[in-house]
Length: 391
Image (cartoon, rainbow, N blue to C red; front, side, top):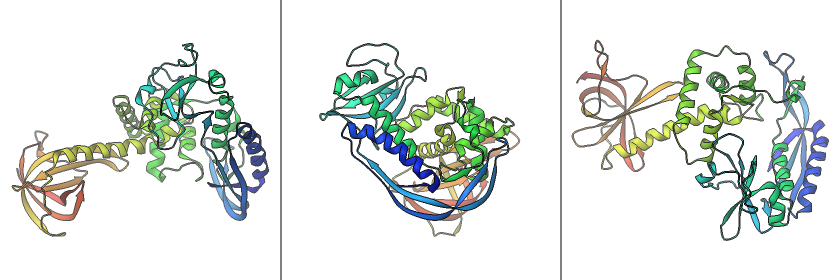
């Protein structure tokens, strides 16, 4: 993989990587680290003198060094370390997969901190999942791994994680970085999430390496207080959603655990939770639609046709986005063809009584055919500018 850092920092980076990779050499894990090129680039400058009023200054031209780093997948003797379990979060564990794309069995989210080597169930902060060539998995305490495999695996695990953190370099200059060198700082998780929601709505999500990241700016913004009420409401809805659902995806599971803690340090799971929540709701809606619609449907009319249709409401779903709440209405005509209308409005039946059309209601709608799409092999006619003229 190719990375970059300020040339003035490259010597220090080299010393760190060389120190860590000595541990890898000791255990026969190969690696490659080399400088590729130097270029002059404009680099962002941030003034952190007042953390409540962080200023982005004019960028300046600096020497930037590009470098390449790679290393073996982590092996411990005849075993491969596939995940680390963090048992410090209460009833459920954080699961950190070490193998890209590998799904860790959900049972390890709630397993105790015992060790299958020494069978001692004493309190441990971390355990490691090891997998042999037959696919058998053992949960082993970090202090037992050396006896179990013949290698000081804790040393290797630390090196592996240290290298991962070092090579993610943000190429920028801090005028005052002293604030970030202190001890751990915490903020209320809901306020933190609300701050990130506001930042994402105002200027989009900013990951590490693209300036002052959302997870950092959101954290220090949350320390000031003064969150928007609407963002706090959305944040609470997101927390409630994660708290009441189970997820196959480890990232979503870890987000759930982090969000259930009242206070948090700087954390990427919280910063991304708003976007993850929206994507998950959209996925949930698509799954509901998939189970509702008729698979024998055919496209109807031509795109841009203005039509008047007699339809039956078959499905009504919705989800929150950064642009507001979106309703999705699924209709069938008399031939069971599928029509879909996505809108921020609702379908009022009687405004005085504050009632709305429900599943099974028949409606006459004036609308325009927006497009024809095929989703999961189902042909759908997408409508826009809909107006109910008879119910």
